[in-house]
Image 1 (cartoon, rainbow, N blue to C red):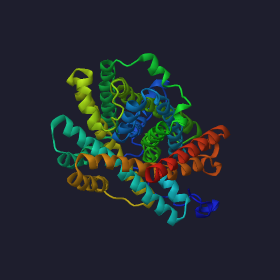
Image 2: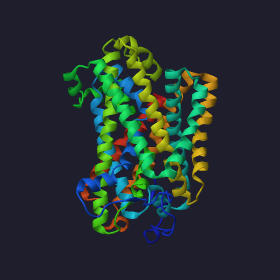
Image 3: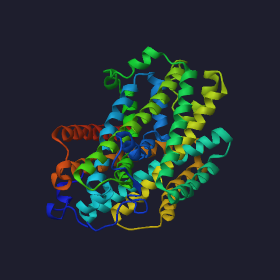
Image 4: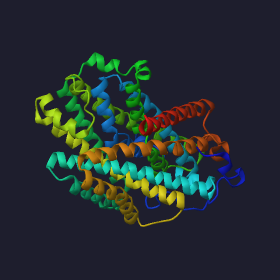
Length: 448
């Protein structure tokens, strides 16, 4: 946590007011109609939420969802629901920060904290983005290996091509990136709807799974998986990303215009996050309906799940759809991860690199360890890398959540848009839960 003594004084709390806007190449590039129906205005704001949502369904989530379903059936669906509700509030706050202040979360930290604190936060955030990117690179490489037989090593290297995809689409307009992400999300959704139909889950048990039970807390093994699901769900880099990309819209710079922007941006992210809820729940449901039902409670890795789905479902379509969804998930997450990397570096350090160079650096940070570990350890090594990436993300989450709640609760920074008392209390309650559970997860990982 950040000590109060490390913060700047209130008089200089918002330094560097003349700094460049977040993602300047697309800042306020998309027009929002001032007249017309609410639906027309909502559609103008729709998009950033889906870029955020892909971080909640990336390959790093898959292992915990598969393990949870295989070991405990449908019981942990309630944990996926609760963690998603937490994410809805935190992402709404991130969007509000960007809309009201004209700063992304990284810029807000730079303008508030002392230079040593800012540098520390930047390093921690870069580690988290690299860890998340690592999970996405490995997920995509595994999918290419499972679907096309491409060796993991080559698959890891191929993933660098997404850098050029992002550049090409962004040069055509930010809407093109949003459209590609939405298409990939619906591809993942269509795959899992078909998978659920093939798996034929126990419907009453499925709906009962969304109701929390005391066994989640009293059963140590179940608690450990539950904490892993929460830790893998709420992604710190998404808070930085969301606070930036909401500023791609040309909303009116008035109190009324900002209120309207906050409302539609919150709807956008909340609806998109329920797509993420469906994807994560679907992975666990399929695992419960196949592996748990068959008594295979030790299935915890993506490759295992892929290999076992065909004999358990009685058709090769199950495994193929699983692989296609994994590939779409990995590619989707890398698109948004490279954007987050640019936002974080430019926001914390107030420097400007050419987009292709920044994204190439981000990708190489993830690819180099993936190539080394894949060359030395093969599939077992990549599985351990996935676990390590989630540990790093869990550690960094607190350093993003605390400043976000602090800034959005401060009337000197947010004015009339500052969090109300109930939002403030709920947000800090969620932060305490996340921090406590992640500290426990780190302790159990290293000492348990």
